[in-house]
Length: 142
Image 1 (cartoon, rainbow, N blue to C red):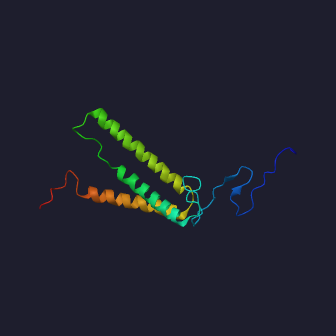
Image 2 (image 1 turned 135 degrees about the horizontal axis):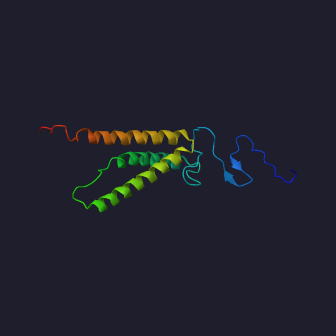
Image 3 (image 1 turned 180 degrees about the vertical axis):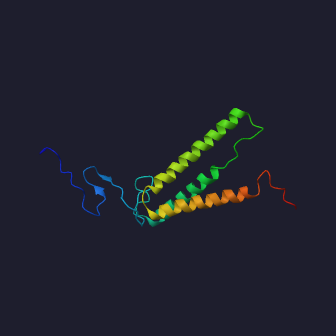
């Protein structure tokens, strides 16, 4: 037992783990620009980079929603090429969704709001576009 290193937690408010030299995540939701999102040293306590991160996460969430409703197949295309294209779009959309999820896991309220707002706007855009394109709806009269 005497050969065990001192495993006491860092002092309250200190997020730097001096034993390993890495940052530890907060265990609750926080406000502010001092957060790590996706990459080390980003946004690095810089307000401009934090706003850019918010905008980036917002756009990623919008893209996830818009890509979720692309046409399922093109009748004129060869079936395998169509399936390959669908697989590529699905893979790309899933990767973007995971990036949004990892960003939200920074426990920053601003990032959470940006992600939810992006998903909401993306859903709205998709539904507005789909609103008049149902096959059983009558043709609009011009």
